[in-house]
Image (cartoon, rainbow over all chains, first blue to last red):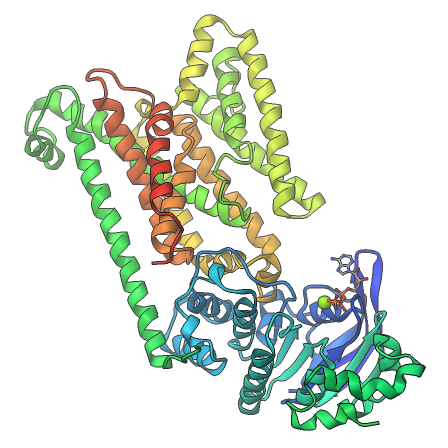
Length: 268
Length: 353
Ligand SMILES: Nc1ncnc2c1ncn2[C@@H]1O[C@H](COP(=O)(O)OP(=O)(O)OP(=O)(O)O)[C@@H](O)[C@H]1O
Ligand SMILES: [Mg+2]
């Protein structure tokens, strides 16, 4: 179902963070990368879409229906949000923690379908070997992948992943995003992920939205966005003098040869 | 390295784990029944279990004297121990969850200090906050003051938001306020009144009565199903506040609901038997070690463990020195704490079953 964010302004208390954010018509099955420097407002945008923050202005519509007035639980049925901070010290197994995420919006009783969905999600993300481990005993990266599992198990219309790969090694970054893409092909949710790694964003996203200082600077296909001067300016990776070294930078990061579409980045 | 297990095997593991948990719950229930029976058979007179059992089923079978001993004295005490243990442990389990703090207990928010002050007010000045309660003066006063603290914290959270730190800080403030007021009462009291206040605060099961038991049972019959109804959001709260919110839990509302539930339970327990610390801490703790924190098993098992602990305490308080019944508040701390520490030390690390 199509997600549209229109003229959204939101913040914390009296400080406004998001200013008139508009992202129109994200179709079902689209993977949108939200990029931008620290404190750009990425997490704030996600929290606002998920309903943790009430916007001061603007609308969020899913399939034409305004969801800003929905209650906490109804909202969670439509939108699943993985917070940037995750992990906990609860005495629960990984399986239970994922089941728990699913049970918030399904009935009280645990039925076979619930158990199947949890098992399948863990399996799809390659986490089934962790199922019986305690959530408090996981490594940082494992905990992050479990948080992703907790989000996608709910199979909502919109999935928001706040830096889902920040704690992962290269292999797991690619494998988790690939698994997410595979899941998307089956269920067709809108997925938005905040990513700091532009290479990953280029490889996996259908569309990139560049956010800075709470406002949208650019929105479009990855190959267009990443070629914009604003990217350089925003990330301050290269000055004009260093422009020629750009290829070297990405090749040095040794990502270019790993993903086939890498040339989208090293071009120019 | 990462061998991916078959989804069917995952389901199997989970179902087996659930079955194991029911096993643990049944085992603790069995122990509780045993302890309860021992509790009613123990005491001066040395009647055998079969005699007591016959009196239980047919009150007049062994004469009026034994009927009074069993029905009016031993049974209310034994039942109260079980009931109050369960009340305190459920309240403790919920308190630890909503405050996200394993050291929280039913009295963390100053409930016991307020109740003690209420009781002392009745003992020293004979002032009742609710008129015409007669012999229940002390109990009712303790109850009302315990509830009052809850109301105050609820009001405070309206202004300041329902964060766990805010709640704990208010609890500490309330604790000190009522402790000071209690000291003031003691300063004004006569020697005899001081003795009564101290005795009240030490906790005793001898104030048991069937009316109180009835009231406590009703409360428990409301509290446990209510916690079970809220089991999924409560478990989610253990994943952290933001994660719980992102899963669709209205954290603020949940905290307020649970706080009301906890204060009713704690206020009832404290007004029945005085201050009995430790049970509300140890019940949930042992339950957590046994079944983890899925609240569907954690809350009922906390209740059972709390009941077991207080029932054993009642038993011990009678058997240390025959003929003397020590205040349970003293026993729980003096004997319970070393046992508790040894449990913690022996299970080196909290493990999932
Ligand atoms: N709870 C809060 N209260 C007040 N201000 C906040 C709060 N959280 C974030 N902010 C402010 O809002 C702005 C945007 O923060 P946000 O967390 O959305 O950034 P971000 O794009 O997610 O950054 P990062 O990449 O570091 O995660 C920042 O200036 C931050 O200081
Ligand atoms: Mg962020």
